[in-house]
Length: 265
Image (cartoon, rainbow, N blue to C red; front, side, top):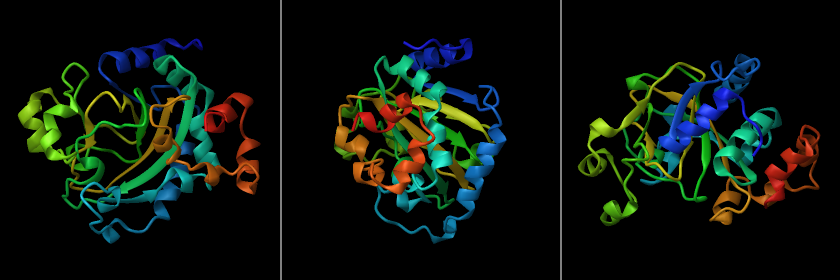
């Protein structure tokens, strides 16, 4: 495995023990995090207003937020490529213990519409047996801001406990299986970074009373359990290696980064 700094080793340890590690871009010592956050702010400003969100189905993210998919984020290579920094790849590889596949990043602006739908439902992600996701808050998030919540590894149940619910698991349903005192809530200021194994802990975004903006980067193994689901983040044709877009992105990447983005597809 690539060598890690002490702080990053602590993050990997936290992922293995709890399934989630809360830190911040500042604590991780990222160079000029404000420049990155400001760039994502400009993306948020160009999105439709959250007041335009309408119900699109109980399990649809479009029922509670506006945003850009990973395929759409390809058109913003400076932000998209930020998730390919060597430090992120090394950290993910140390946790996954396999070569890394970078799935991409998504930007979301959540509406305070009081609906527990989409990713506000309790769930575990299914792209791979282990998945590293990095959720970064773009604004201060307190109890009213819809903080990320999770069930630590040692308390996370199996989906069998909810088989009668057909994947629609709301707070009262989870409370019957795992009491609320065992849930963990991740509040924090702008720039908070939450690293999680999204496949191995139940988690969700709690229902906010004010809008919340975030960006999420995702990593799986280069031989994932569900390759089609991994590719759905950025369908191969969206990265088409003969396009001008690919030429622009490729110029920013090392050979190892290119493998992490397209070598596994």
